[in-house]
Length: 319
Image (cartoon, rainbow, N blue to C red):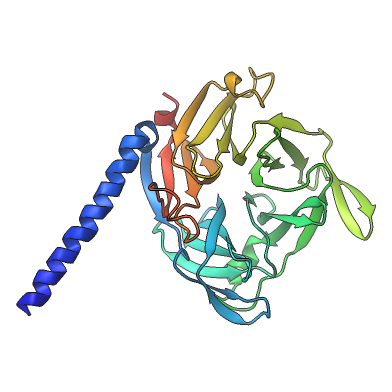
């Protein structure tokens, strides 16, 4: 018994020592960013997740990689895809008050799900998708997610529509009755497009080859390369930039003063973040940030591994 407690004590020292050492590393490397952190939410499914294999049979996936995130009145939703492309993508539903995982919602296919967005008026969850050479978005009513039985058959999309202007819907957000979609590009400038989605201001729809293609009335707007997330705060546009092991950045543009959103020199501020930053989301004065570095495929690629969604105070970040 004495040996047992001695071994347990040594293990706890190593575990806690390693944890706090890594935490200090993060805070020292990105002091401005971590000074604003107010809360964290654990990301489910990083070690293993329930899903379906390519034969639509239940199977545990050990390669789920978080990509998109949004919040509703009661939930924090995180989307993830199988890095090995062997399992259906999923949405994890967390209680936003406690941070506990409520359920894993299995999607009917294998999209990259790079973005999630919540429309509180229509009570729909939108997710990034593709349709051949075009970007697409799919919608799931929030009530269907609430009624979904954990780890059951795949949930169905209420609708899936194609976006005329973009080849990929890399990032997604909802703001003031608009669905805002962004294209990620490594070599060229990205693009951002706004689509009105309320019934009082419907999307323009073009029928083509049995597909419904949506056309934005506003055209496209150039943004910097390597943009993974887009969100809005007051009169600011926030863009998260990340690629590989490079330090991530959050660019903050004043919408009224900026003449070229692809010119990072016009940003009023940028904030350095750990690598592998994905979607960002703003609610009130709080910024939520999701990283994919906690996934099995990326844990060995950076010393700055984050396995939590971070909630940060924007009033501190914007000082």
